[in-house]
Structures are given as structure tokens and as C-alpha cells.
Image (tube, rainbow over all chains, first blue to last red; front, side, top):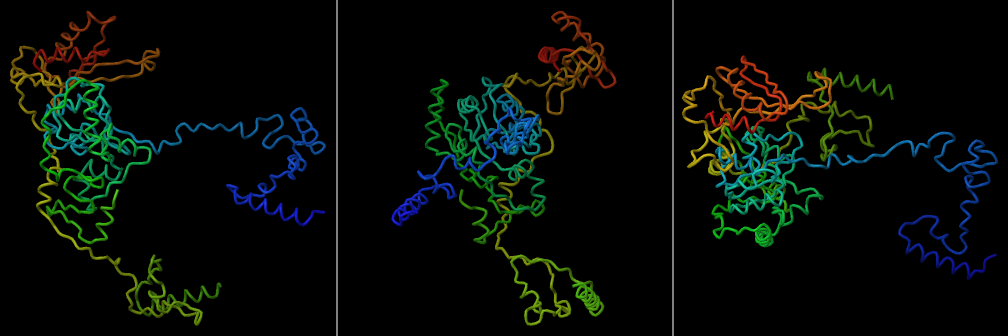
Length: 299
Length: 212
């Protein structure tokens, strides 16, 4: 029979335990000296006399059972069913169409894109030479061809991914490159603006990159659109030193600040939430505060 | 319950006959107070009241209530920012360069070739994107030759004139350096030549030297 003071002490110690426990269950307070580690097993059938594999033939005799999940003369279910989760995240992966520096220079040579103006996904898709299919998130600039041939000077080249050598090639020619993320609804609008305007939908507010890509688009090394401009200037100098070229002293004039895009904006000069009517040749811009607060919600 | 359902249908039909209108469908209006919408909704006071009877000419289901939004229309924004997005549907002519080949290695067809004065009995036209019509294709060897491997081919298209003469010239160009006999297929109806092997670079150089 327990002494009342001992009972009070054990209650206090158990209350203290419960305060410290990460989760509450019945076994926490029992983790004391009084807890019999064999106590659990004494009341389970599986580790009793005969509960081993050699007794498999006589499974169940004398209340002796094999561990849970085992079968006699049969691969247990939990081992028989394989788990191969290699592509379980296939829906989270983003595919980018490859466009090389040689392709870019060829487009410039043939007059398909104009490097003196900002070049982005819409301009490359409009050539119809690099079509965007379902669930392709834009273009990636590769350096496998044309690394030494690039002479075009891009006022503002915007792609979704670029290798370090490709960034160096663009900047060596005196150009500027930005890596920008677009979500799928923005891609649908940008890849065929004429078809999108015909639907009459308001321009979407572009979403932020997914968590796995936030670091890439926020870093200055990849010239991400969310990166700090001061860091980008520093990284331009570092890359020039690394690859051994000098940056052009005359910076590209961005006299048209209106051609810069905010993170929510997909078309330069057009705010999200606007409705474009090609038939009327008008842009309808909302002025209501709640509509603007939604479409220009902070990043 | 069945009796009340039958009564309901009877009342429903009676209501329809009285108003001579199709019965309105019940729809859930999210965020709208059903009591306000149906003033005679069954309540504890009178659980048997049938709101369908009370409707009369009440317009219950109209067009969606739209919230007016202030807006402005701008044609300057359209001319400045939308017209660049409405791309032309045709491929532009390449700009004139000071010298050829361009930095990407492209040259236009020579004026002689455009005029048909190359002195050769054939002509190879550029594609609509101003590129040479040389392509790569591959097929499986197992179906026809019953050996494993891939048959890699160079295809030349858009040939006009004596296709066999071009095939002869290409064979003379490629066969000496080829590992084994050169397999060439000529189709003068569609103006294409298929050569087994990857010879795109050399065929392109040959055609550009001709001026095509």
C-alpha cells in the first residue's frame, strides 16, 4: 500500500514529465523506475515460448506467434511489396526548353529577335522555332554551342534558367541577362498573347517560384529577378574576373524604366488585372482598391 | 416521409400550373442568407409552409450579382505595350549584313543560285526560315536488317531539277571517306535524298559552296 506522500511525489514527478514530454501518451508517465520494461512483453503473445522462426511450422502452438507481418512459408507482405519512389515527385519537376547561345545568335542574325529591345519568353516563342508544350516552364540558356560566337548585345535577355558560362557569354558581349520565373497560367498568357487576349481574361498576377526554386531566383549568381541589384553588380565583376573578360564601361541605358517588370507583372507596361481588348484597341485598367490589392499583392 | 414527398410534388405541380412557369430549380447560394432569399422558408413556427407557393412572380434566380469595378480605358498603353506583343505571322526577311558568314555561321544563298545560274542541273531551295534543308533522322535496324542498332541518316530536301545528279555529286563527295559503301536513296518525285550516316556538316558545306 503506497504512502500518501509517496503517491503525491510520484504524481508531481509525473506532472513534471507530462510538461516536458513532446507528445502525450500513456507510456510517458510510466517511464520511471516502477515501469517494468518487460511489462509490455509479458502481455504480448509474440515473444513467448516458441515465438521464433524455427517454430514456423508450429505457428500458434502454445500461444507462440511469429512477429507481426510474418507469414509461414511466404514472403511477408511488408517485404513483398516494393517501394520505388524515384519519380514520386514528377509533378513537382519543371521542364525548360533548351535554347543554346548559337540558337540565340542565329535568331539575331536572321532578324527574328531584336537584342536592342528587351527579349523574353514571348519573343522567343513568337519565332515558333522553340514551341512551348504542356507543363514546360519556359527556356533555359545552354552553353553547349555558340559560346565563342556570341556577339549580340542584349539590352535585357530574360530566360528561366541559364548556366554560368552562358551568363558570362552574354555579359562579355555587353549584355544583361535576368532569370525570371513564370507560373503556368502566366506561361499560357505569354506564349501566345493574341490567343490569351481573345479570351477576355484579366492579365494574371504571376506567382512566386516554388520553394525548391526560391533560392535560385533570389541569388545574384544566377541573376535571379528577386535578387538584390547591388549583389548582381558585384557578381558581374566576379564572373568577369573568373572567365577573364572585362565588362564594357558604357552601361546599357535603361531609358525606358517602364520596360522593367515587377515580380507580379508578366507583360512590360501592362499591370496585372488589366483586360486587353484587341478589337477595341484599348487596355481596361481597374481602379477599385480591392481589385488592385488582389492583383498587385506584395511578393 | 413518402406521403410528404408526394404532397410536395403535388404542390409543386399545382404551383407550376398556377404560375404557368417552369418550376425554378433550387440552387445553393454560397454566402447568401437563405432566410432572406426565401422569406417563407419552413421554420419552427410553421414547418409545413411551402415556399414555392409563396414565390409568385418573385424573381429568384437572376443573373449573377456583379460588383461594379471602376476602370479606365487607355489606348496609349495599347499602342505602346500591346502592339509589340501581337507578332506578325510571317517570317521576316533576314537583315543585310556587312559580311558573310554571320557570327552564327549563316550565309544567304548566292545571287547566282537565286537566279538559277549555278551551272548545275539541280537546285536546292532554302526553307521558310532561310536555312538549308538538311535534316537528321534515325530508324531501328532490327525491323529490316534484323541486327541491333540504329540507322542514322542525312536527308536533303527541297531539291529541284536532276536529283540523281545531286546524288551522284554527294556520293563522290562522301564515299571516299565513308567506312564501307555509301547507301543513298533518291526520290525525285518529292525531291529528297537520303544518305545513311551523319554527313550533315559536309553536305551543308558542299551546298553552300555551290551557292544554294
